[in-house]
Length: 504
Ligand code: NAD
Image (cartoon, rainbow, N blue to C red; front, side, top):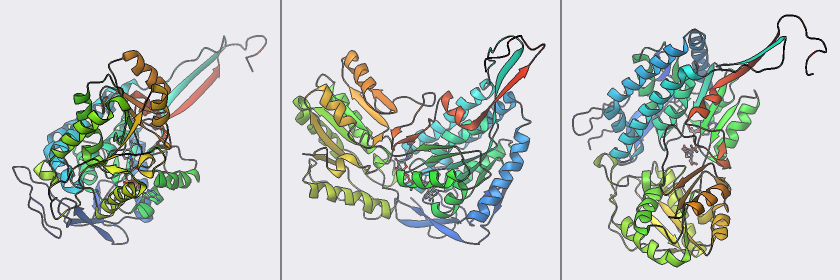
């Protein structure tokens, strides 16, 4: 691929040109403006480990301006009818759809992810916008029967300015997942993308205005988490905050938001198991397990990074997995391999450190030797660990890279106990031909999202989120709309007061 050091436009192969910002600018109130401090930060292509551009390093001052712009736009948003909100979101979906190849290539450049994967994530962004466009005029209150002489009803209104702190692993997808329901319910947004991957968020803000939204509807403050991110979480002008990221940062965000009692949705990490019973179709399961722990180089919160398998078929399944893993191609995202690089040198060191920890803990790598990886970029070969015990760190902690830990079980009780033996509760995969068993285990495990015989199954319409350290609240589906509305109750006396008074 053609990349340049510095700030010039970057031309991707084929027909679509993607442009990396030439000047470090934020997107506030419909305008591209520099950070007030004048500071900037580099953007790297993780496939080549080269700097490809520069963005503004916004901080608290810029966040203040962005929230003020969003507050002004929120006043206008309140006057828009629900049906018009739906039409506006549909227009935005069309803008994204028209720009989907450009956005996919920009995402690949910024994250290193394989181009096909980026394309499917951008298609998912369009799907979020379409789905919540359809929901915009179906968010309403209820009337509650409290007896003669009284009227009680609820109204679901916008919260005003919503804040979105986004991670680097699926940048535009995570942004659209929360911004779409926020706009559908009549709010405006301030987005803080991850410092590693700010590019598609800036382009998204332009597309929002191209779709006809007023300036200030979607503002983007690029910058560091401890500066711009913290300032946004601590801001008094925010009606709701959606944070997607790590547990450590999630705690910091909750503490900052506590000052103003800002409601927070937290979508945090995972250590999701795939439970395989002996009657499962092992060839099919092997394919799903490999996708589950290597897709996006293992950098998905719901990566199926723990294989829990009936000991009767453990050896056979591991052989299938190792063979499939060995056949995966690894390379720069733009060449569309099976696996791209990890997002940064820092993250590469972290994941490689876990592989070393696994060896030191006494686990054994089941994979054979593999050819050389590309010499530039943050590449790491997938690793499958066997001889793992439940107390090992590699069995309990989120690694967020292409690393699988395999644990055997003898019966269903042991499988459920192992599934629950981490501090996380995000995804669980269950593989069996016995539907009674599948549904029973689905009911027993402590997790927010269970997938039977189809890992990564589901989609826009089904609620997603975790239990335990995996977070609070739910995204996707109609239930996510609740995070962006303020429920108001109105009670009125109508007509003469009935004898004996009310229930109180
Ligand atoms: P991270 O926590 O390092 O960063 C996430 C965001 O928080 C970034 O925008 C960052 O700049 C910002 N941030 C950092 N410090 C901050 C602070 N003190 N105050 C406010 N904001 C701050 O996470 P990451 O490394 O970008 O993403 C990987 C993590 O995200 C993994 O743990 C993964 O499981 C999780 N994740 C969860 C989901 C989900 O839906 N549950 C989805 C994607 C990723």
